[in-house]
Length: 402
Ligand code: PMP
Figure 1 (cartoon, rainbow, N blue to C red):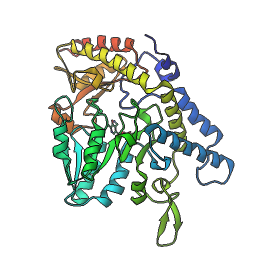
Figure 2: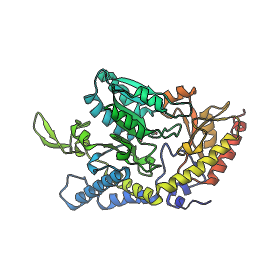
Figure 3: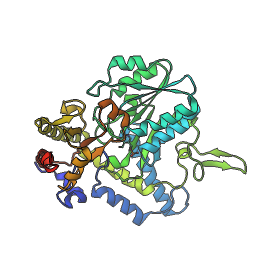
Figure 4: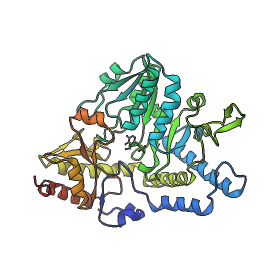
């Protein structure tokens, strides 16, 4: 079956490369690069500062992107969106501004063993500096977090649960709504790492019960260098700035300063306005494709991919064996072959996959492996690519002399 969306992605037309590293970075459609070029060629000026037309237009585009991002994730108010560089910076903002100032010794921060390092190291830092204790949710072998595990780890001592919405290794979708219910019953807040969910599924932070929600533009058709932290308005108002300097102030004297209103209080220095214009275009593109189509395409391709891999007895697929529970992410190992060798030999065959620990070393330890290979799909991939990939995978052991 052909995929008409591919026409919009110049890089996919470049050659026959099978790009299966979408969980690391997605490709950008022409509509996104054109929106950024339009910004650069028509209104590139410092947003928020100038009183002249170009700067005003740059500000308008930047604020439009904020409204688009708010609408995408169901925020009640666009002021609840703080633009950052990426998910990592968003979580650090929450950790430095909320974690260091509102958590203390005796408190517990609950994370899962599956977290990407970006949703672990900031909380390790908060734990070291405040004395709050890190508590780990342990998944079942297939990546599921059971009700019993949630109830036993999220307690009245919990002040914050920091949880990935979708694991970048197992592809499992965590029961974030239920986690938020339990956390809130215990008086704790919830931060959701949405890096791997925002590109693939409709998200509504209010329905999920997320107090904080982080995502990156580059994984959802947008440019690198723009991401966002959503936080409830009352939280942002209470939280002190993370970075300080230009643009985030109300009044400055020699010794002190008062800060701008949210969200500007958290956006020190010149912002990435052309990136925001690109993010807006990416959001529009995703909405046009529709999350139903995205999900349906990914499920079809993932089922085909997993079936092909499952037929090879020397391949281990990590996480659930049910392709519907993978969100397009399939992590595997080929017996006898180091994943780096697998990725390298596939590169020489024009296949791009990821190999390594996927910035999730505690999960690698839990799985009992040092590293794995990972193929991650998006809606612009095709059945023909999956079949070509499977054909090459079946030859890898021969190529590597196993
Ligand atoms: N969390 C998860 C679940 C991820 O998959 C990633 C990216 N691999 C990140 C956080 C970090 O995203 P970024 O590099 O855009 O900050």
